[in-house]
Image (cartoon, rainbow, N blue to C red):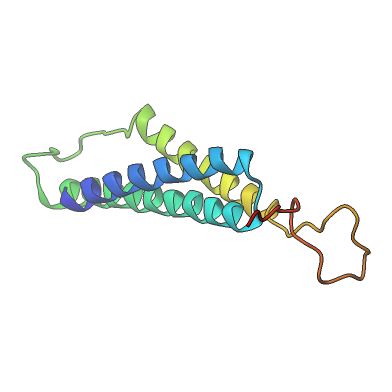
Length: 128
């Protein structure tokens, strides 16, 4: 129970951070922020995966060793929330891959193709 609760809380915190980074990335499209957002989404997917596996193993253990919780020959189903959690896992993996694929370094508009010293994304005006 504690493992499932811990991973649920961790997944929730990482998900909120991932969404904050995603919103910030829309305003400031820096490639490193997109990679960080991709990492946050993939970490959320990993936490949801662990949460689902812990739940499956807990039900299997209760079925095999705790007859007072799940009687013998009883049918049990996981329900729609279990399906929704797997859908969340898939969506977070897709979101992580999309942010990872769009995180390439962009050169300035006026740079030559062979120019390796071009600035990334937009030019930055440093005021001193």
